[in-house]
Length: 196
Image (cartoon, rainbow, N blue to C red; front, side, top):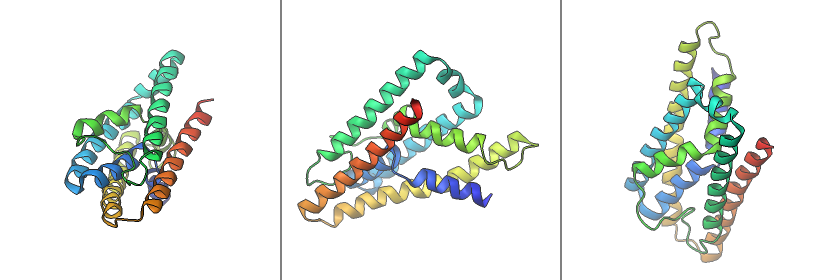
């Protein structure tokens, strides 16, 4: 279980649309709004996990046309986020929104997040914990994932709030934005490479 927990931690903590947007919402709107947005991410992530467990994701992604459409939409969205981050200038807000995003914004991000499907498929199909009782294994994995997922996403919101509070010099803020945009582009590159 420790190997599984370590894999969960490293797969979730790496920059992706969920954690980067959580940090952005925290930086732009504060902790309260950030936590509300994370609730939406949590619910959306749970929907993706259920789809992966139920095999719906496999069925949907087995259709080349549907797979191409979802891949194109999600990749375009990630590129859009990376561009918004990179062009934020000296205002650290990662993926700054014009108005407070709510729970629905978080829910809607997850189904188009390719990292979410890739991570959850890897976690639920790999790392056998109880191969003789699949449902018990899925239940334990879900509990472990959520126990790690929640504090990581809250920490990213807190990171965004704290980073904004530092009131860094404009050139440092731009560098942070470039680094976050580069991280997002790395996720896009990995998604494109895995989709080829």
